[in-house]
Amino acid sequence: MTADLNLNLSADEVLTTTRSVRKRLDFDKPVPREVLLECLDIALQAPTGSNAQGWQFVFVEDPEKKKALADIYRANATPYLDLPKPERGDIRDEQIDSVMNSAKYLNENFEKAPVLLVPCLEGRPDGAPAGMSASYWGSLLPAVWSFMLALRSRGLGSAWTTLHLLGEGEKQAADVLGIPFDQYAQAGLFPIAYTKGTDFKKAKRLPAEQFAHWDTW
Image 1 (spheres, rainbow, N blue to C red):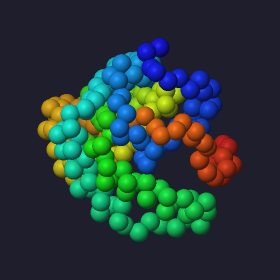
Image 2 (cartoon, rainbow, N blue to C red):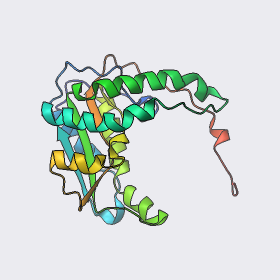
Image 3 (cartoon, rainbow, N blue to C red):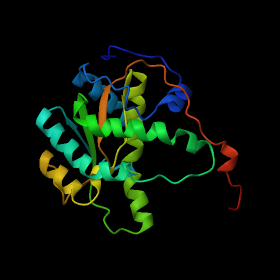
Image 4 (cartoon, rainbow, N blue to C red):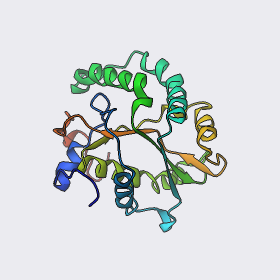
């Protein structure tokens, strides 16, 4: 492999330790293009509806374009992150402060990531019924998650963000990157960097029994 780091993690380890990385992104270490392409080759093995493979992945290294995308993101993220968050009465409440702090850190430093990624899919699901929308996004999101898993196995991290898509943000981002807005929809904005340390662990989650249903709700 061309990557300079291979963590040799098992499938279960990769699946259970791939975190949304924000404060531990290493903004100073370059990310080689060959590593990104290696991860993308893996991601493109993901399933896609009717084998259409209508995906496109826009990697952004140019500092001015990264700053423009970060500003679009901040315009939506800053007021959202300042909103009070609902209490749920379980372990999720224990984590909300750390989650919000790390999200605000990324919001303030987004453009410092060596690479940003905007995954796109051909067509637009605007106003589509639930079934069509699920089918549409199901043709891209597995590949994006596979890409994040491939990053993790090579000592890199990312965070799946979508706030830049609100309002006019998606159109503004399309203009910055030359994405044909009428032909492709964006799935998010991802900072990509090597991580400071690779010792990520399982997150605190509620037990599976609280989410499982058998034969009826």
